[in-house]
Amino acid sequence: MKISVGNPVEGDDFFDREQEQVRAWRKLEGSHLLMLAPRRIGKTSLILRLCATASEHGRYAVHCSFAKCETESDCIRELFKALAVQQSIGQRSKPLFDSIKSVKLGPLGVDWHEAKPESWREAGEELAKALADGDDNWLVCIDELPVFIINLLQQGEEGRRRARAFLYWLRDLRQNHYQRIKWLMAGSIGLDTLAARLRLSDSINDLEPFPLDAFSEDSALRFLDKLAGSYGLQLNQELRQAIVARVGWPVPYYLQLMFSHLRDESLDSGAPPNAAMIETVFEKLLGNSYRTHFDYWHQRLEEELGQPEAGQAALILTRISRSTAGETRETLAQAMSTVLQDPQIRDQALHYLLDILRSDGYLVEREGRYAFRLEWLRVYWQRRFAA
Image 1: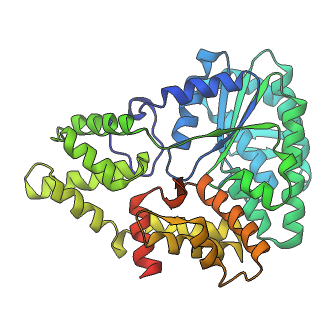
Image 2 (image 1 turned 60 degrees about the horizontal axis):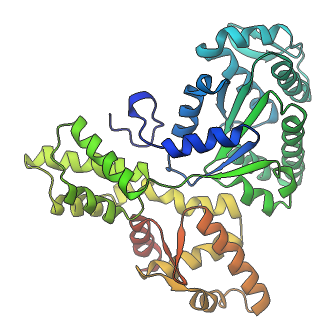
Image 3 (image 1 turned 135 degrees about the horizontal axis):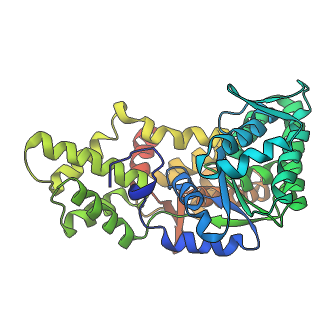
């Protein structure tokens, strides 16, 4: 197993998630899935694993991302490109293009036969129909759909209209061609949150939620043990437990990050890893040079919620960051009173924001108190925003 910080992993580098795979395939027998997972959980890696093992479940699978798409045409083109370049389904996908009149496949990629703004609708519908009319069963995985929807929302009222239209169009596509095609929609920003914000929850009510959490403690310990073995590093049970405790929430990305820098510390010093090195790495990665590992958590509030909700969520997180034990709902309501004086409006806003912050991986509720799930993030937030 190789160190891979921030990149999806495949093949022998993919670890565990056995129960999640079994559950996903069981759900996909009759449902489309909405994979709900905070950033860095390993969502894309799991999706790629499902695609790699799709043949074992009687399906051909294709995966694409809408993260860099600026228009609806870009999204549909990404779907076609994924079908065109994926070698494992090449023999199955090439005949599809012969039956689709809206696009052409050439040496430079996929393009419309006619350059019309509305061609994406026709092309997308033709693609789904071609897949559905064949003899094969398909799994179509679309990653970072919420990022594209946010891109549209930033374009004003016309962008909001297009976002609504695109979400409902996708829903119609799923419902019209569900027998041969199952869809998996995912994103590091909750599509359910976006849909609720836009009052469009019915546009995704055919998707069954599939929450993806961090590793269990046992999986995290085995993961670190396997990584250490791959690099000949001495990492006993006590040190592995110390790493998991210091990170606070065993997200694969942060375990990889800690291990990578711990290995550097060990190699640079010529000594085996120890508890002091773990603390050194923890503090080092909170420095300004490594802020990108945590800044995204603050930035995504604005992307997902917009103002004034993003500011209110930041206020809640700042208050909670001051204590490892977290804060009660009553204490948070008092903090919110500085920006929302009306008690009813304040309670509604607090309920809404706490739900989002829990589902997006910021917070966990334990015994009536709300606390950060990721200890690293709590310390980062406290030092940057609450000091």
